[in-house]
Amino acid sequence: MNGRRPLRLLAALVGLSWAAPALADSVSVAVAANFTAPAQALAKDFTARTGHELVLSFGATGGLYTQITQGAPFQVLLAADDERPARAVREGYGVAGSVFTYAIGRLALYSTVMALGDGAAVLREGAFTRLSIANPQTAPYGAAGLEVLGALDLTQALTPKLVTGESIAQTLQFVETGNAELGFVALSQVIAAPAGAVWLVPETLHAPLAQDGVLLDPQAPAARAFLDYLRSAQAQAIMSRFGYQVP
Amino acid sequence: MSWDEIAPAIRLTLTLAGLVTAILLVLATPIAWWLARSTNRLKEIVAAIVALPLVLPPTVLGFYLLVALGPNGPGGLVAGLWGGRTLAFSFWGLVIGSVIFSLPFVVQPLRNGFAAIGEEPLEAAASLGARPATVFFAIALPLARPAYLTGAILAFAHTVGEFGVVLMIGGNIPGVTKVLSVSIYDYVEQLRWGEAHVLSAGMVGFAFLVIIVTLLLDRRFSPLPR
Image (cartoon, rainbow over the protein chains, first blue to last red):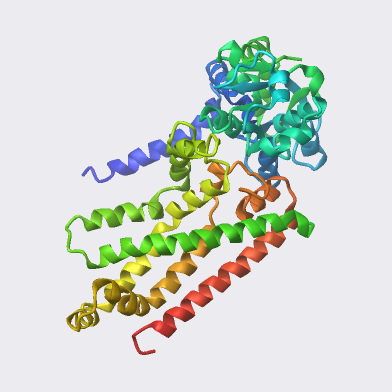
């Protein structure tokens, strides 16, 4: 009698799942942790415009790169530096000619308990027990934080106070939970914080944080479309809202 | 890879595991004794609480610990005694986390060990006039020796193998909180696989040794014929 109905339902579902990609693709994107909030906003806007879904995975750039070398199914990498995307192309994981700078990030010193009017002075004074920083080996924002300490000639004085987050996200979390008094984070993470809690680190103190993207899957038109979208005025408006400079 | 680079992590891991094991053996004894001998109907609730870390993801424990050890939790109060702010990112923070995380690995074998002694030897000693403390130290403790050995090995091994909790509350400070498992993770993330291979192979050997020793002890002390 109606014993066949589940079968028909199954057939319909299978049909749907085959039909779906023709209408809208899903693009898997590996995103540097500093770019988490803008990437989520961009994904929403991109989906609204194109119907393509974005599946975002966040992590430290170095960690994401390791996963890519081991065949992680990402189609796009949005790195926090310009080194890994170039390396991806060199080592055969990225599509040649697809590398471009999608944003230039800003480093910020952030605290929930100290007034950071002049962050350099606060760092020099050293009246804190823990300074949180992202792992400089895998997170470009962490490397930039170390450069700042070097430029201020504080490397020796402050190294014993450093605690290292696995990504810039964990670095912020150490400050937010109060376990570290202050930390080097991305401006986009604290864009909504009160002015006195954030010191925008002068760009003279570290190499510019040029963040490059690269296409990893040459057979993914929707991934290409997303990279093109990142260059659009609408996307750039979203990125500047989060404190990124756009090239 | 230079020895100087990994020696602090190895030393730290062994110190941490040794200390945690010692604390756990002391701490777990009264709990396990009570669980094995009490007739209180609520005791399985206590047993379940002790066993929670077996089921909980390390991230749950790591999250709660991060808050509890921090300046707004009890950990911050304790740290304040010597002018600190938080127990996170400290060796003692790791000790606290590891003790909680590995507690069931000691309580469970001890409880079984105490239960296996049965009433008879203890009642016999008591009827001969031995005081409760004497009964415990002269009769129960020696009889439960295999259980203590198993518990100690498991606690030590489990602490050496801990990763998630340490990653969340450690802050990756060389020589203070950067244990072996975290070092391996870092090497892998940095694509320094030569180092990761050496340390990982060492851990495989260590784990194998621990399991073999545990199995052999189990056979040796097993009351069943083999």
